Image (cartoon, rainbow, N blue to C red; front, top):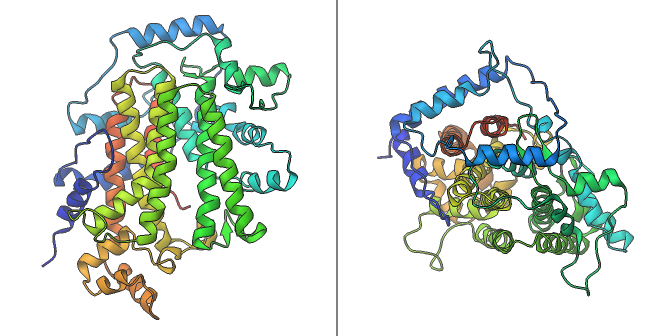
Amino acid sequence: MHTPLKLVIITKAQKSTLSASTDTKTPSSKEVSVQPTFLERISNNFNTIKSSIFKEKNSSLESKFREIRSRSSSGNFNYKTDTWNQAIAEAEKLVQNERKESIYIDPIKLVGKDLLDLTKNIKRLLGSGHPLLDTVSEYYFSSEGKHIRPLIVLLMSQATSIAPKQCNAAHTEYFQIIDKPLSSSTSSFDVPNNKVTASTLYYPSFSSTGTIILPTQRRLAEIIEMIHTASLFHDDVIDGSETRRNNPSANISFGNKMAILAGDFLLAKASVALARLRNPEVTELLATVIANLVEGEFMQLKNVSSKGTSNTMTTFEYYMEKTYMKTASLIAKSCRAASVLGGSTQEVTEIAYTYGRNIGLAFQLIDDMLDFVVSSKELGKPAGADLKLGLATAPVLYAWEEYPELGPLIKRKFSQEGDEKKARELVYQSKGIEQTKLLAASHCQTAINAILKLPESDARNALIQLSQTVLTRKK
C-alpha cells in the first residue's frame, strides 16, 4: 500500500535537509494542500499588471549612506512572521500604489546596469594573452543565458542593504582594491582609465528607494556567473551534450580538451577575483561551493546511494543531497556572501542563506520536471537527457513509489533496451510530475517565508516574484 500523496510530499520535504547551517520548518500537510491555490493567485495577478516605472534619484554618496545607515539601525525590522497565513497575505500584496493596485516590479530594471554590464565585465576579467583560450572561455558568454544567479545576488544585496548591520560599508575609495593584486608577483587586470567605467566599477549603485549594491557585491555576481559557467563547460563534457542554449556546446565546437581547459581557466580567474575581494569568509564560502559542485557531480555519476554512503540515507534523500551540492549550494552561499559583504548581522545572513537554498532546490526540481514536459527547443538543451544519462530524478523517484517495477530500471541506470521508454511511460502515468512541482512549491514558500523577515523594499518583493518565476518557467 502506497503512502498518500500529501504525506509523501511532506515526508520528502522533511527528508531534504541537507548540509546546511540553518534548519527550516516544514509546512504541515494542510499547508501543502493549499499551495497551488496560492501560487495560482499570484500568477493570475502577475498576468494582469504592468511593469513599474524605474525612477532614479541624483543624491550624493555620503547622504545616501547616512540614509541607509539610519534605516538599518532603526527598530523597523521584523524577525518573525507569526503565521504562514500572515506571510501569504504579505506576499500576495507584493507592491501597491496609492490606489491599492498591485504593481509588478521588473527585477532587471531594479538592478539596472549592474546586471546589464555583467557579460562585458566578465569578459574584461578573462583576458589571457592566448586568442584561442579567450575565444573558448568566452564562448558561453556570447549567447544570452538566464543570469538568474547573478540577478538573485544583486537583488539580495539590495534587500539586505537596509537590514541591520554589524559593520558599515567602507568608504567608497576602498572598492578600487578589487582590481589590485595582493602580491607583486601577480599582474593586475586590465582596467580602462575611462572615468565612466571607473565610476561604474568602483562606486555603489543606489535604487530610487535607497537600497544599495556595493562594488564588491557587483563583482561577487560576476564571480558567481563565472563559477556557474565553468561548471557548464565541465558538465557538457561529462554528459556528452551536443547543444547548450540552442547552440552547439563548447565540447562539440572546440573538443573535450579545450572545453575542460576553458572551464579550469574560468575557475582560476574567478578565484583570483574572489581573493581580491579580501574577505576571508566570502572566500571560504565560494571555495566550498566549488568543492560542492565536484561532490555533487560524483554523487550524480553514482546516481543512487550505496554501501559507501550513509546507511540511513534513502534514495530520495540522496537525490536531494546531490541537488543541493550541484545547484542549491551555489545560490545559497552566494546569497550569504552578498549579505556578508554588505556587513549584515548573522541573523540577516541566515535569512539570505535560507532563501537561496530553497530557491536553488526548487529551481533544480523544476529543471528535472521540465525534462519530461517540454521540447528541446523550449529547454535550450536536449530534452529527455536525464534518462539517457541513467539519472533518476524526482519525477522518476516519485513514480517509483507508485510503480515498484521501476526499481530494477533505476538500479541498472536504464541501460537495457526499452528501459527509457518504459520509465517515461510510468512517469506520465504516475503523479510524479505533479508531486515534483508541489515539492518545488513547498521550497519556494519556505524561501518566501524567510525573505519576508527583511524590511520591505522593491528588491525584497522582486525576490518573492522570482519564486513564482521559478515555478512557472519553461526553460
